[in-house]
Image (cartoon, rainbow, N blue to C red; front, top):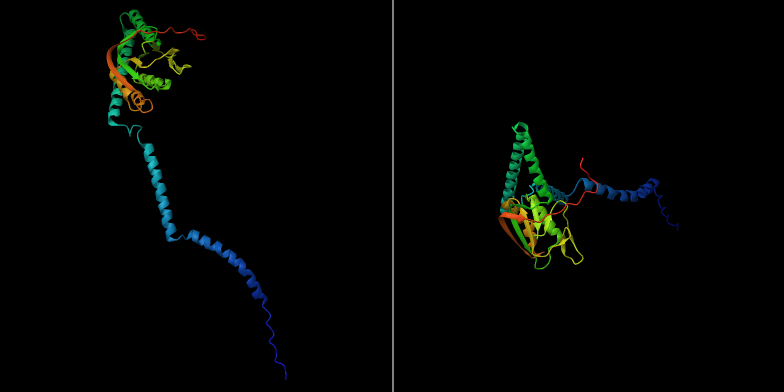
Length: 267
């Protein structure tokens, strides 16, 4: 019997083989195209999340800008603002009075009948002011007497220095500590080897007493302003107390002897 004919396997098409070889490359390239399409065509959930993030960032930026635009004293209590306003008003009156005195002195020097006498009086007045500022003569005037009680010994030299600067900002013209130290331009605070506070080399013992000449109400308001002397001393960090007494006549008898200048000479 004749043998059945065997089917000859078909020869694969070369073009088909090449097509199959390109299939893996298409498979690799396919995810990249899908990512790009997903990036430019986000889903509804992604779109909602993006909008929420944008709104959150916008709210944060607007909040920061509004806080930066708020006035410096926007969060200060009304009582503190009233004290600050009184201090500014009193200082304004003092400066206006000083301007008036200077204008009167100028007019007398220019058109006064006795110019020489007016010049001598003005020179004498300026000399007295310079002596008071330099601390070489006693002084008297209205002001305040402040007593700082420090039972825990936590008052520092820095705190006293800040208190003095606050009083000067409030218009204090003459300041004395513990009836023994006249504070002038050259004054300084320090701490000795035993940890005691010193002013111009003189040891200060608690309670610390500050006598200041100036407008009494303005000086007290400057000491009681929130964050100032009273707040610092009576806070938890120090745990002390402060008493302030307005006095119509503060007598400061302590004086200083200014050192001779080493380099500067009158011209």
